[in-house]
Length: 542
Image 1 (cartoon, rainbow, N blue to C red):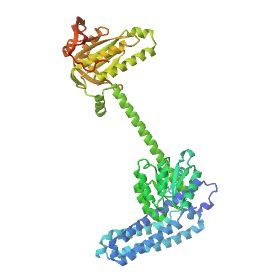
Image 2 (image 1 turned 60 degrees about the vertical axis):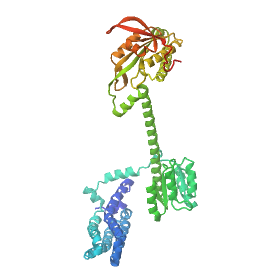
Image 3 (image 1 turned 45 degrees about the vertical axis):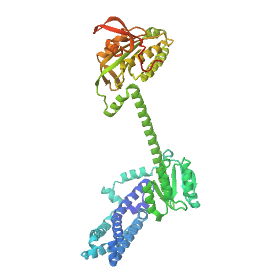
Image 4 (image 1 turned 135 degrees about the vertical axis):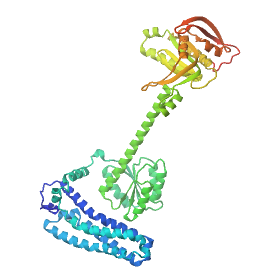
């Protein structure tokens, strides 16, 4: 039966993907054997740095031998059982290779198994009490490797693994195909990269590697130059050497991350292999990644592309957040245009506004006289332009007298005072407001005039609708105010009896003939004819 080692004589049209899929399978098998070896090394390293172990020189020496045996075993597995070597070995030579590997691996496992077992026999010694668990684990892992060797070495036959359904070669080929697919130009991120290194040769190597990929490059020979270049803006990524004179990479990174303008610029640390512990510290401070010399072009491109892509994603995220914030502010502004501020707050907090009653509220209705005939003889643009300007003027005047606009209904305007904000004499403020409304209307070239009606009393208030909110007032007070306007006089302010009582000492009021009002019978009406000389009304009309 052909094995993985016979791929040299396989069909010459075998795809590159299929070959790589076989390599992936072999790597997984090799790593299955390496896993306990790595665990052994981790345990031994932990024992050797423990101060308690130093009490027994022989124990430290033997643990050192275990460590050395595990390292040699690891190197043997990585070298001899590498997928490239296995796939290039002729089938006739594979059995001999497997026999030699088995012999060498078992020899190197002997110290891993025997030394921990020997020291466990002396576990009653006081200094060993803290290492019993580790020694038992070392012995167990060594025996596990011993058992795995024959199992793993017997499983390199890919065709047998496929036949026994241990291996789904097609799924691995699919995965390799996805991983191997080349990034399209649209997916490759291009950016402005700052290279910081005191060694000119290193700077030149990186620049020569990156410029052909489309990146624009700026270089700096020390930390101060790097910070100055970054402050100028436009840098998408910084490649930062750790060891530099004057100001090392660690200090540069701290300054970058403490600057609000620069903290989001990604930084990749450049490190020699012996400086990895410093790289870890830099990543804790906010560095994005690290590169070690000599540079692997594939890793270099992948890491730089990943950093630039994350930066672009963060920038887009910030743009989306800013857009959401703008939309939120716009929605708030629209809500405040439609509804009073206090109601907006309650709606946002509770998603509803609880209906409630208010006492002593002055309600004003105003209606434009001669509006309909004007509409029949003028364009819609002209009508809306004049009406819009007039309503805006009324709204400005309402703010001056702390009168709350409720709504417009065609050419009619409804407002209230003393509703959400307590004020002195709401009726008086409505009269002042009404005077300005009439004056503004009469000043237009349209020939319009205005009737105003005011009543005061108890009202109910609430927010209606779900798709288009409307804050509105209900009750007899609202109906009576509307009747005062509809039975009013052009260019005048008409008050009910209740409204008249609130301003009788301040205003000159002319009693009009009582009129029949639907649903209310005969109702007295009073026309505002000015302020008494001794009165000092608030906010005189302008």
